[in-house]
Length: 393
Image (cartoon, rainbow, N blue to C red; front, side):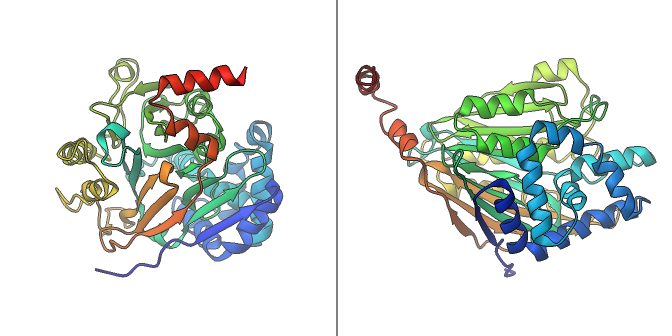
């Protein structure tokens, strides 16, 4: 197997500006590579670098109103990395910017994010702890432009997230036990309006102290394009939200599992909108089936090793659950960039870069809040819960 360097850990704290500057300084090289990757994609579409500002300008005024602290953090990232704010915003809004650019040129997107995500509830696991994870399928170069970001906060739970360098969040969990992963979706409602870019929504969900708040943020925040987000809580529940730009459709665990790839599953959603993405991801139909089938074989005793095994599945290689680097028709190299597995109750995340070539995982830690652990310890004892409630009056 090939040895691939692990994703570096960027550890920050303080005010939004201080966090951003420290982030930019620690990840400067990868941030510059990340910016270059997407600027070059825009150039291939026929847009000069100067036009990045035009596309990003569509989002910045709304972001300043919706999340001024995150804009301040991006300003800090830009200062720390010696780049401009527009470039950092491009990394965070790259899905939306590239889609808008393609639509302006009348170019069909043949290279969407892939991803196969899964959550296993405690009743199905060996240790009684929720397990959450995914494969992220995208540009192979992102193995060199991604990081793990740990944020120690004074105004909410700490968080740990895997993200592209310069990004605010992608997949991860927080010290309140709330986790999130995301998958590409597409519908006929996409890009009619300008919404909040997806990394900002994921970041806000990871800042939530309560699971209900995370669900609300994902469900009701207006988006430019469709996306699937799986939310979980270490206290033993998960919900999948298939999000159109203006509406969210819920999918609940089946046999204590949620597995989702890149096609719409909600019957309600499919009765109200039109699926438009399957032309690019027909493999989605078997990827989620393969993962769920392999997990069901160990139901009741599933471990993180079992989830890894399922996500390593090579059926229909190379368009498999675990995708090796291969050149697509447009010339770009696609791959499963990272396999991300986390157990919030145990306070750790494990990530393997380019897992089809490297099965070496690096562990990243985040301590859970004591109050959350205490709730989990007593969650199956109603009398204990009642006694505590009476005592608190």
